[in-house]
Image 1 (cartoon, rainbow, N blue to C red):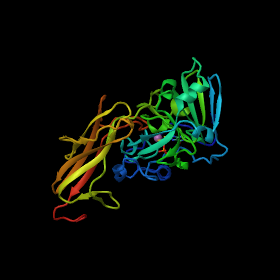
Image 2: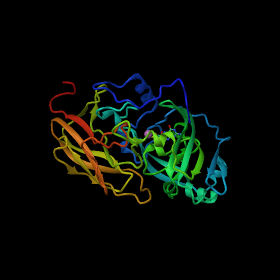
Image 3: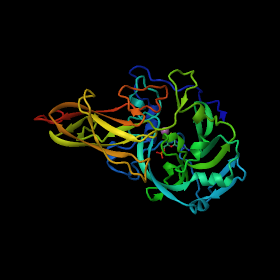
Image 4: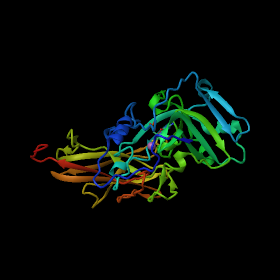
Length: 374
Ligand SMILES: Nc1nc2c(c(=O)[nH]1)N[C@H]1C(S)=C(S)[C@@H](COP(=O)(O)O)O[C@H]1N2
Ligand SMILES: [Mo]
């Protein structure tokens, strides 16, 4: 890593009281789109609806010239081209992905950055080959502790010029469900999702799933690159070392019912019975339940949760909850719980706005005689 002179070095800033999203944040938001929440209806998010997050530029990688290096603290370094990788045993796994910054824009005070509301999620069917047998072939030495994964993309972050790279503890890298992925929803991996090959670490927040992968380096010391040592840490004070962000905290999302106002996104419903639907997931322990409130969190009703699919333990799960919608204003709230505990209703806050799983609130107006806007 080298520092460039031109880019101001520094810490991520918190927005001032009432400070809106800036043009710089808008530039990030238009590049990095979310999944429209009505797409929660699909088990597998259709192509183009899955969220995208790319720190720098989508790099131009020529699949013909591409090769993956497996190096570092190994007995036999490997170099595999795309054909060699694709000849290895392949599996397809449905895996929920969520950006660690999901929900950031609603935090108070608001950490500046990609201003995600709640759409930084998606569920794809990823096809690839397990990493662990490749590491076994390379012969990981007994001194190994971490594995560093480097992408072909390059940029500057808070004054530090770098290739995007993330370290993973060796034990996580050796999990049988960690994949080197070349396919998404039955098609070749698209450019924005990491073509030709990306890493998939089911259960971890998005930052671990390195796209445009070029190098896997086994380390005999802890990885200290920017994306582990500086970014993706839970800190409430700027000077703290912070706790690394790892697995996805439990969350439930509601597909907003009814129909929206174009500008305000306010939701309208006709009165009568409706079935509220959504998805729930957790990367740390199996989801145990989902609860729905139609009165802003004063009272809660258990939702019906679809059974877990043993073939796809990292997929999101559908839930439904019947509601007799009466005319008037209501605030819908949903929360998930996993075996380690429930999703917090009060906001969990940190300076980068990462790994926050504050509940979703959806205000709706159930129409009586009144028309929208009337
Ligand atoms: N090489 C590289 N890998 C990356 C990123 C990146 O900027 N560069 N962004 C990460 C982050 S923060 C997220 S949330 C996921 C997003 O994956 P997606 O765009 O396929 O949804 O990719 C991760 N992998
Ligand atoms: Mo992310």
